[in-house]
Length: 257
Image 1: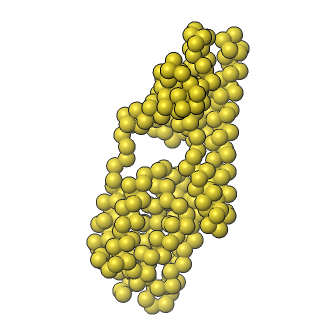
Image 2: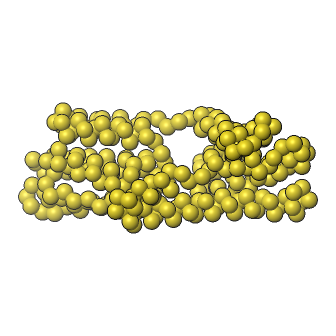
Image 3: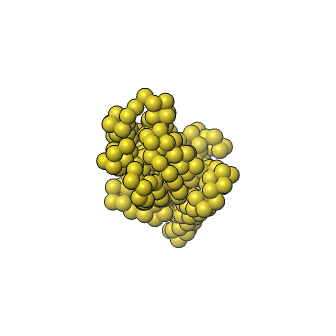
């Protein structure tokens, strides 16, 4: 393997791992997939260590010199389509069906897979909030209130996301808006249960993926990555709770609650 081809192969492996990690791949699967890709491409003495927000890898050049690469992955957003595309790429590499050039093209296509449109995200939040409100004991009168609360949360998250505002502050504001809305409706229509509407809407914000992946990382022996994910889930849950408490305090201060 020439040095130029080696560099391209190593960059391909790093790009593949970064794509997996940035789109919701588990830490141990990212590490395993990168090792499979490196072995399939002939990268010698490849070693990789993956955290929730970074990748550290090293290998040896054909001449014997060591090369170390680091990738920072500051944000993670779930896109299982991209994860599956990279997994399929690694399987084809392991089967010897692809070379470096073909693999680069397939990886570029995988990274370019479009995300869900904002309109669909909003509709999903509305449907999810309404469904959870009914699931957790709400009545048919609570469903539309929860749906509007989900709409408010979605609009807050989309607006703050465009300006790269911190996730915790975003969740505080979103939870505050849905809480104040539900309490205000209950004050006007006593038949509505603000609790059911708030719970249903908050389920859209809960950090279920971070919590699940944190537990899985710990069970797989990745204690540091698992602890980071669990801490992230705890902070998000605390932010949601803080937004709800702030909403109740404001409502009581206005004499609504």
